[in-house]
Image (cartoon, rainbow, N blue to C red; front, side):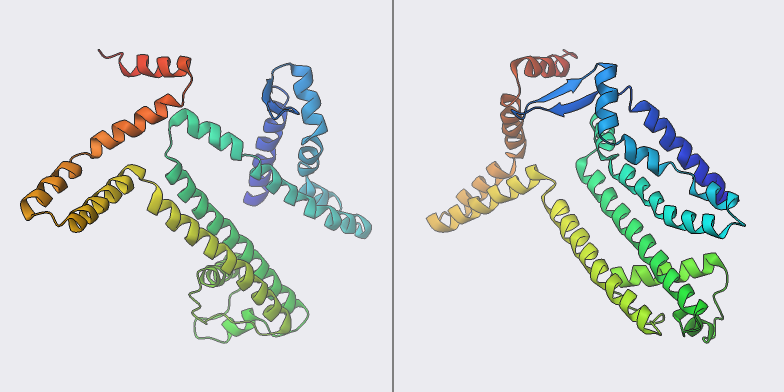
Length: 294
């Protein structure tokens, strides 16, 4: 089974990461809010055991293998169903990877704007996947109890029934994306009370996710180039000055040309201000690197 093999590969990656946690330096914030890096292996292991170790161990429980072993025992199957939600703890480990991504970006000078846009796209993709799984699960559960479902409604339409797992997932993903983005084609609709409740919850959370992503992305794109924004504000103030003083056309043109060509000087001033905020040693190292070609 491809999915079984994929789950084992993910478990192997998480297990390797769990072993590495015993050898990676840990940043600890003291009482005076001063961060200190811990390098001693024993201290690193103790901090890890007190923190995320239990969560990592529980998230590695092979629920799929337990299901295979308990295929003919009803009591064991019930226990496996209780343990199955423990797989969600892997999501907690994924959220912990944010610090690793930040370190990777620092080493490769990845623009933060691009990383944020990738994060927003990932949020939409993950939320769409979750909503699709919930919507498909609700439809299949209603079908098992004999209630009319959105799957039956699709089956009554000209394009035919949705029978395979991938076709159900594709239809559910279509519903999730159009619900999150507020498109609402109306080709997939709830058919019983359980589906109405699930649809309302998906719409509520989906609308919040969409508003957050759109608002954050627009604000990020609008303010990411501070130099250009500062230059445009300078030109606007220049035009206001010209109008307030009633300057002639020739003088106004000269002023606009002067401030229009001053973008490089403004960028240099901003760079000097940033350099002044560095320590003397770091400022000297940066200056030596920048002048090495000379």
